[in-house]
Amino acid sequence: MRIAPMRLFVCLVAPLAMAPSASAQSVWPTREWRTSTPTAQGLDTAILSKLDGEFSSGDHGYVDSFLVIRNGYVVHERSYKHDYDRLFASAPDRTRGPYNYYDPSWHPYYQRGKLHTMQSVSKSVTSTLIGIAIRRGEIPGVDAKALSYFDGYKIPDDPRRSRWTLRHLLTMTAGIRWDEDTVPYTDSANSCARMEESGNWVQFVLDQPMAHEPGIAFVYNSGATQLLSQVLKKATGIHADAYAAEHLFKPLGISSVYWKHTPTGHPDTEGGLYLGPRDLAKIGYLYLRGGVWEGSQILPEGWAEASTTAQVDASLDKRGLTYGYQWWVAPSGNTQAYAALGYGGQHLIVVPALELIAVFTGWNIYDKPPLDTRFALDRMLQTVKRP
Image (cartoon, rainbow, N blue to C red):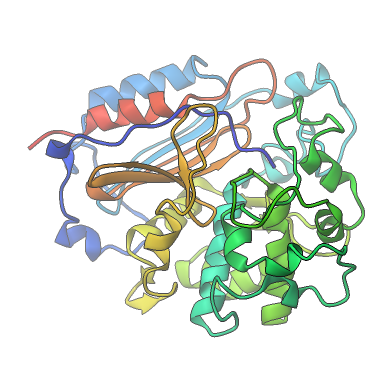
């Protein structure tokens, strides 16, 4: 699942940085998010309203929702309607099904309901599940040998595969030959498209030839994330979606979820998750709080920081982004932002120093470019009132 095209979002100047407030640390949105006004939480209402107007007018493509959380409070929330049936009528592929991204019964909303496709934001959630399994002792750590989780699969003979670790899969440095840049996305030359057309996604990825030694280079590879579905199944005894329901979604109070499945029954861990914006924001809040939720350590100590810290140089298209454990990172001095990003305009952006979380959903795969993340974040940062 390709991420949405995106230019680098910049981090903040020093005068904006501030320590998390005591009030923010005491707010837990397990049952529901508390609400406040932008002004009460130090944001400029006029700038937020202007951006909202631009989204309503379609100036930035098909944006479906816009949510801002500051200091643990929802301060701005809007949704926008688009006629995806009309767009589908002129789409190049009018076949229907969960893996035809033009089908309005599946994209952007699940069965035309409120759950929105997350696309590659699913990768960040999958990484979260790996962290939980490590904390629970079901996985020894990121340096565990990956092939030990693939009993019953045919492993092509190449000694480089035997050196795979979970770290290589999490950072997309496994060395697999993979092309996820070919456009359009439905082109048969696109490795992810061919995986999604196959009958066994895990085996498809294992069958791909090696291009180089693991750990040498970052190559964006949805297949590497799909391999983690089997790692979780082998390590925990249940599929990733069931594991998430018990050990991630339940503690966070997330009850409305859908996860697409592959032909062999694995959940589509590389791009098949559907959530609502407020629930997606809870994932960001979990990381903002260092993996702790209501006093309980959900993630291993240090996991949130490691996941959202540059583990590899993953600069793409001169954007300057780096990559952690399935999270995108934009470091700048003592301040950083990190994000989970997905095809079509899915964004979960966290700016820790400002206690700021932003969620954007959209479906810009038709006739308009996706929302420019740098533009959106920069505009939001303008709303933060300086002390």
